[in-house]
Structures are given as structure tokens and as C-alpha cells.
Length: 187
Image (cartoon, rainbow, N blue to C red):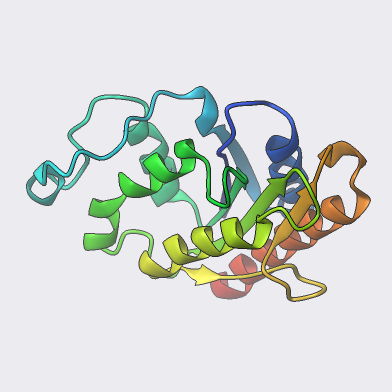
């Protein structure tokens, strides 16, 4: 069983820190994990060409398809994004939009999904970003989980994630909850 962690930041700091912490909890429970840094990849936005409807995969030739294949093989997915003007990053949005064919073919249905967000202040839009990621999971037919201890929306930090103990804890809790649900579904 495997959990895929997607980092939707162009930088290698706060969002990557949270996703890494969440995946470490999955590993502790015996799951295989993989971290993919979308912010370092070439993933163009969807152009609504409708070729995916006929071909069963996205027709744009960039890094997207390799990640989509990993997404299909995973049992759980943790997506992390920084808050950009109250929204997910452009990298996450482009990736989400390109998964249209996965939805049409129910390829992500019943997989477990958890969301993480980082922002510049404690109330800097993290819940808005988490909700956007949850919407993506729900549209794909996935099972959405939150922070395992508080049952809040997901993991969230502000400022320097390496110094935000509460944000780190919610991210660990989210990773653990994703792993627990993946394991329960495998029984």
C-alpha cells in the first residue's frame, strides 16, 4: 500500500516540510510513500482540447502524465499547497485541472485524500486552500480525511513551518489518519 505526497509549491520550504512530516507518519504505519514536488516540474494548464476523452489520458506532453500514473497507483494521496491570494498555488491548480480524464474513468474513486496548507499568518487562508483540495478529492470520488486528533480539515501551518510546532502536529496527525484509513480499507 502506498501514499503519494504532492508538494504544490515552487519553493522547497514550508509546504515540503509539512508533506514530508505527513508521509513520515504513513511510513511509521508500514505504508510505502513517495514525495513528488510538482513545483519543480513542467505541468502546463489544461487547454480543454477534449483529446483526453478519446485517448484516455492527457494529450499534453510534459511531466504531468508520469505523476498521474503514480496517482492512479497510490492508495492514498496527500496534497500540500501554499496559500496564494486565498487559493491553491498555480502548480496545484494546473495539476488538478489536468486530471479530468481520471474523473471521467473513476480512476481515483475510493482512494484516501488528505490536504495540507501553509500561509503567511495563522488565519492566512489555509482553510480555504484545504477546502479547494477537498473539493478536488470529492469531485474525483475520493474519501476525504482530516487531522486525526482534532478532526479539523487537515494540516495547516503559518510562517516558517520548521518552527510552527502546532502546524507540524496537525500535519503528522493528518498523515497518520490517511494511513489509518488506507489500512482499514485494505482489510
